[in-house]
Length: 340
Image (tube, rainbow, N blue to C red; front, side, top):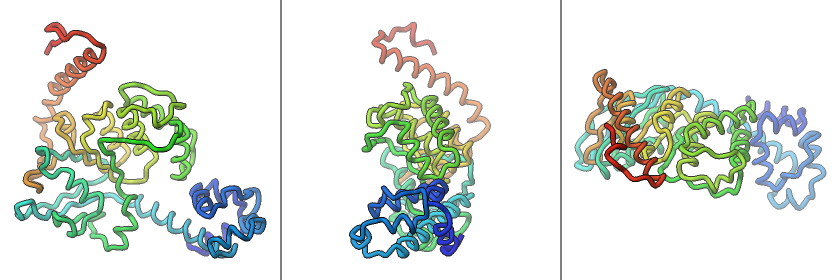
């Protein structure tokens, strides 16, 4: 839709219908202190009843505000369309800390999971940062990130910045004093979800399935544990986020069902990069990037033999999980409990 199309929409549809179709309209109006506008008529009519001082504060006439909103909605819609069209990401190698060339070009498509492994301080986070900022040979590593086999110019890059990539860091901290349901409802409306109640319920149930300890939908997000917060954001990313690329840093410390979380995101046709020291996660990935001396040393495709070893790794992992639960419960760790 063009700006003219959006102007026609705003001039012919009641504000309530515009908000229903584009909930982000509420955020636009809030920026101009117009949250209390009547929505049972046209926006231009509602603006006629606004005190002159409010619009004068921003140096706007009612028509100017309509035009600004039309441009805003057009830009928002184009960004969603561009993000939805991402089917692959390519990493073209740069240099490592020793200034040696990486000599790699790796293309990853929707639904693939890539693990990033290497010693602490080797440069795993630097690779995640390059992907997040859509590096174009302008970071210390000199890597280039291409989308759909094409490099990005500055305009494309910074329009997509913060929208193309979702990052789940080790520490999740909420600053809004909302309940879980209020948080999910707010995000669903901002994302223009067609069925808010359904997607909120799906996210809530999914988060409880991933979390080690369940929580209710009226729990304040500021009261969630680290594992519960991480589970909530993974479910939110899977079912609400438009971002086609997800970066995850050391999910093994999150207190959630990490393997189930990764598989969930992959099934949602996300491109997943997970930095990890966990063999279970590393071998569940389609490929793993080996980092040494701040650079990509090599890329290994997970072999059939490695996948066959997962059963033993899962057995060991489950045994460790049982021991952790016994420790949390205050039990003594005896030889009988350690049954490998």
